[in-house]
Amino acid sequence: LKPFWLKSSSHPLVLICSLVRRRRILGMELSGFNVNHGFCEALLRGLRCGFLSVEDYRRLGTSDTLEDMRSALEETDYGTFLQDEPAPLLVSTIARKCYEKLADEFRYVKAQTVEPLTTFMDFIAREKMIDNVCMIIQGALNNKKPVDMLEKIHPLGVFENMKTIMSENFDVQGGFDDVYRIFLVDTPIGPYFEEYVKKKDDRREGSLGNVETSQVGGVLTKQDLELMKASLKKAWLEDFHGFCMGLGGTTAEVMGHILSMDADFRVMLVAINSLNTNLSTEQQREERNSLYPNFGYLYPEGHKQLRTVWNETTIRAALDAPNYAKYMQLFDQVKQFYDAERSEGSARAGGAGLQSIEDLIYADCVENYEMAFEQQYHFGVFYAWVKLREQEIRNIRWAGDMIILNKKDEIDTTVVKIFKPRS
Image (cartoon, rainbow, N blue to C red; front, side, top):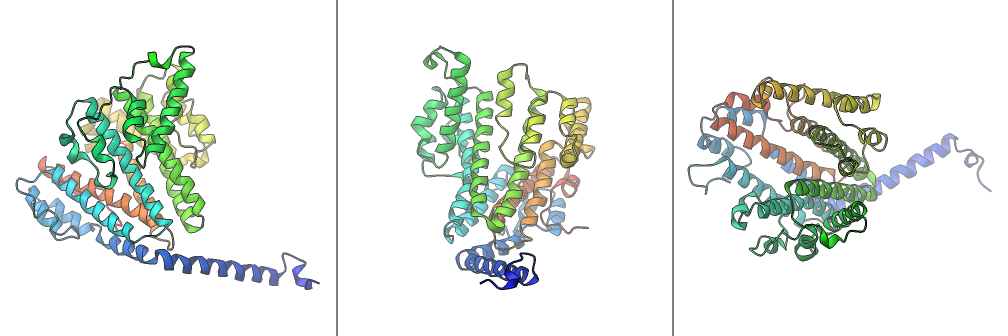
């Protein structure tokens, strides 16, 4: 017979037992996390201290030349990473060395990991692999030699088969089908290409009816490449989100929020940029809508509304809901920038303190990534650290560009500082 207090789920003793059991399970989860992943998380939290401080950015802002910038960076955690680079120093060289330092630290941390953290970090690298492959294909379309593209390769996205697609024999004239079958089938991002090629073939067969697909020209265009890159990023994002949700616990909570915000920003970026293109045919609208990830805070109701937008009025109507106030504010800020850009030019728009959608998204994402460090015992800090370091490298590149243009006064006010003191 059960004790009388077990017969009622609201009895105080039942609630206490439930709480004790929940805390015991949580304690086991946390102790297991520390055994398997505690050292790697400690490494990451140590690397957090290496981000440029407000004072570091102030010193960058006082640099008159890139050599002064080199000296300023030597006083930070970047150290002497530029000591072997000859003068005159280039902004592209500084950025490349920063990315190489990030990749070295990433690989060092990954070498200490065990599953499932190892696979989690593989997912982070796959996004850069997509960027690299698309950049190489773009270079091949423009008849650039592989050697000319080496400096643009993101070191975090280098994979074993990279030399094959960087060879002189890499040919994109046969279309995406041949590129996938010959060069990309065995790469870590091969499944995403396979999914894209299959969907592209399905759409092509549906639009051509009885026409043989062999009769369709395989020549790739810049628009094809942009559509492919966006489709691959969507497939990667959905795959990564599913993996994180499968991990459960705090990782699912933190990464679920971060990736949902990333997905929503991607939807906003596609929707707003599509306003400047021709969406006169149903097929063009379907291609745009197919780029929306199948999760996020905008999914599914927001997606349903955004699938029908074609101008500024309709996009405002789609975002006219209390839950989407943040995205409405984002759109209004972007509209001010593009209105100023059309009337006065991009330089005047930027000088007036207005920001493009990419800049606004970067700033919002930085806050999300910083918040990941406020909780412990989860994998989200690894993703957040990489993203924050990439933003810092964008800041350094921007600072270098402003020094060259003799506009160093704009450095301190326009960069997105990482972990800056909050007022």
